[in-house]
Length: 227
DNA sequence: ACCCAGGCGTTCT
DNA sequence: AGAACGCATGGG
Image: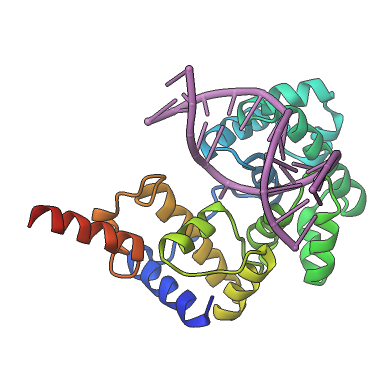
């Protein structure tokens, strides 16, 4: 995966989507909770769970710690895997409450590698969730590699490394480790995949058709059928 | 009645 | 290191 191929993809996305300024939440802890709840889950279901947590004012570390396990489970139920996720949220809340005086944003004053290691030590927080929290809640230059990113790379015909870390590093180096650029890049990938580039891509109308090899093939296929 | 969705942990080769 | 599996809800 070359630097040039990433920049070409980034330019194509930027022309189409511009600056999105994105993660649908206001406070950093809510962003972290959303990052956990959205694991292999549609955002629509996450919104329901978030709304239920907010309703009685339970979307903060202290209240999550006070809730019974079964109460928390029923609140996050709509987001699926609710027993695991309730446990994960308890663990996250306990860490934030004990180590950060209830304020997750205090992490942003620590070095990135330390923050990442600490997050990964929590049960239920793997590479993608840790990077989402770092990028969107803590405003650190940590690129998020998710299913959308890999799908788009494959569709664009960009050969990439197998490991999560290699793909992550390639984006961070190509985009020169700028927080808002990395955040916007990931946001654009998600928006693009959620709208035009779905499971069976409707590449005939794909705005990246000039850059995306899969879209190009599909377009030519349609053209050949007509002739 | 399927398949999928912004993964993670465990337990195998 | 990498593959297979369980976890669970709601929408298409």
